[in-house]
Length: 216
Ligand code: AMP
Image (cartoon, rainbow, N blue to C red; front, top):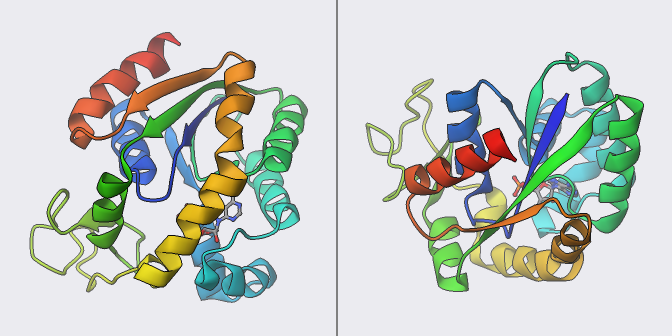
């Protein structure tokens, strides 16, 4: 199992990039946000406890995430390449991931740190639309669906994520700066961090990142 982490502020484009690269390389895109949203929809115990945190733009407690990822990795074939989007988000989660990686005889092979100005991030969050049924992501200008407001994959009407409202966005960016940004230095010390300018279009960034993922 090979793990690549996509790190960066909400809205910087982790999910879009991970999805594009997963398609190109055959890797599996692993979004903890999407897993949690599905758990909320299905009203599982993890979903019920996560909902309030997510609606407020706060982080779901580390224990919920670590258990979820333990279960996920236990079911993942040994030869898989995984693109983690949204995990880890705190230093304790990163420490737990190291332990899980050892448990499943895997390792974090590189951490792609996506960086962009706040104006770019706010624009990407403001235009984001998602499919509530299959989880596909779009942007009104940058990644428009073929038919406005309709999912390309399953034709469901697209929605604005409940945590993409302006008040919640502000909170999520503050939570990122306080709890997730310290991971940049943490992975830099481990020698696995690669910084990428995330302001160009996805396809351009994807070429640079595909090279790093292949050649380390
Ligand atoms: P995302 O789709 O990655 O933006 O995640 C949406 C929301 O899910 C976040 O704002 C958090 O509330 C929750 N979430 C996703 N991943 C994590 C994580 N690794 N740790 C804690 N909360 C998470």
